[in-house]
Length: 284
Image (cartoon, rainbow, N blue to C red; front, side, top):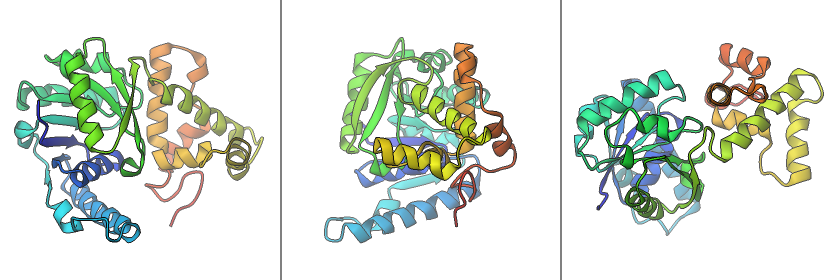
């Protein structure tokens, strides 16, 4: 199966990154979101990101930012996805929202179109169960910022076929990504570990054991991490962190995944990290 047109559902932080990366590596992209203003903002952000990258790659870029943007078609209508060969879904990490998206995709996309869930915690087998193409549903957990991260976590659902795995691997290779294949489980590998780490770091802050700066400094200075857990939370988005830890808590029914009350309070207050301008740190 030859992949030429890729649909990207959801124009948030991850959807923007995926759409940009796809367009920069030769794919025609359809970026869908239900809000026109979100799409306008996404288009401008992609332009800004491409221009910023061009400053560091002078002489290497064969295409202008306008050429790359020209490969991305934006729409508030799912109907446009009828021409997609592959769809990457990036909607918020809430099952009640995701479960409404896939039947809609099922009714519009071609029968051989592959659905990839860019989810951080929701089981792929659960997502596949609400479609009629479970063998063509796969998890692709992109890392943020997408164009700069060379590794993705690929999740094989219970029914995901080898053919689907191979097609997804080829598409990711063209995007400049190496994939690490893991089996389906809530949170997979990366977020089953990372969300616990971040949640515990927030408990440290709540319990006044250390400041956010010192928590992060210990991880960077002692373990060589490029970012500390609280800086990472701000980058991902505290709302996304909370949704993910709640999914783990719900699926495993294990108290170790109990969300920190401070994390819940910050999300309620709109302190979502970089995207809101303030989280554990303040951003201009």
